[in-house]
Amino acid sequence: MASHKSALKRIKQTRVRTEANRAHQTRLRHQLRKLRVALDKKDKAAAESLLKPTLALIDHSTHKGVLHANAAARYKSRLTRSVAAVVKA
Image (tube, rainbow, N blue to C red; front, side):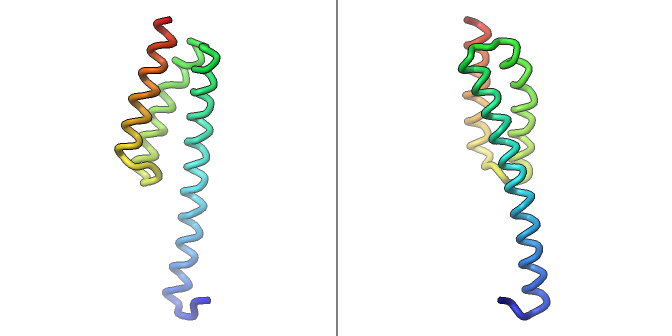
């Protein structure tokens, strides 16, 4: 265990940040799952209504450092194409 004041503070900061990151990552995964379930069911209305908040959450995750920028772009592209395919069908 750390004994210096600064090391103790860093441990505390790390715990707080880890919890925040974990919460944000969980929120993102749940939102992605909701959209993917709507896509699997071919539910046009639900897919369209969930797309915009999901994309916003992906952007926010990138800004917070929870998600890499390229991964976010890949998710957004694939989800947008999938929703467009469901709406078109």
